[in-house]
Length: 383
Image 1 (cartoon, one colour):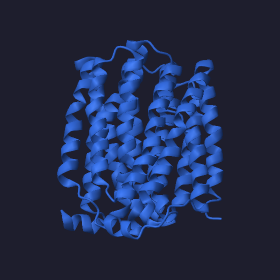
Image 2 (cartoon, rainbow, N blue to C red):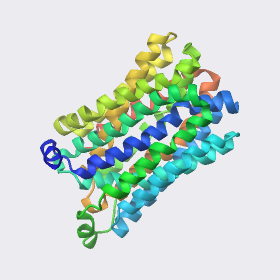
Image 3 (spheres, rainbow, N blue to C red):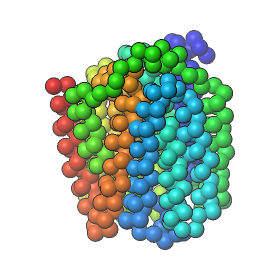
Image 4 (cartoon, helix red, strand yellow):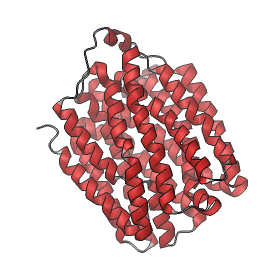
């Protein structure tokens, strides 16, 4: 195994972190594949409430990403923080099975995302610190691919589980992959050796101009990247049956998976900025198709483009950061990036929910306008 990993240019740490994300995402994506349906058909909420739930959960998560990143840099420890984060998320999700009100769902989703907020920045820092400079794109690509492979299997499992166990039984089932993820993390992931050496000579963190410009682009992207839930609702509006929605969600994740590693390789070759702009372009095309189409093939094409965009953007956004920030502040930088990426999710999805309620296409027009600005702003990072 070590020789194989050395041959492809990644460490065992990256592989095992990918496997942890794989099992965690099976658990998470089982939930996400059926949660909009559960909220609409079991709890009886409207699109604007779904927007509030998703937006609040992600925004709180994003604030914690910044704090956990700073703490990780400050104390020189990554693994303990990552274990706490994954532990919280994987323990709380099965409790959706005893939720009978949208406020219950909101509390559980927020707690789940608190776990994600705690783990994400130090985990991304571990990946960057465990990779050679010219292989960072590949490292994030491999991690994101394993992560999203779980995101494919999750919705595919959700489809038969929903038929056999119902909504609540399916939520309880998520405890199994969650426990597996926690055990692998505790047993196989080791603290990066470079952290304690770097901590001793750490200088005060400050935002440089290139990183600030990048954060502006990230902010506009986040404002425009409305929740997948609105795509699912739009699909049902066009005529896709409720029971087929988990499969539609699986299509998004399949194309997300197949794009991750190629996107990382492409970013290592032609540059992270150009690759990221390509990902933003795919999102623009996706929203345009979904907004204008009135047939199922059109929705399917838009969904595929959305999945391709996710694979490119999630890999390239993270891979770009190490070139903009000093080594000893990676977790803090990832924390700020993740905070900005997510803290705008609440107002974004509240606005999108209101617009979708007025007319579904309005939500996608809104998203397109801000993603277009984000694409243009990327052009100025290196100037």
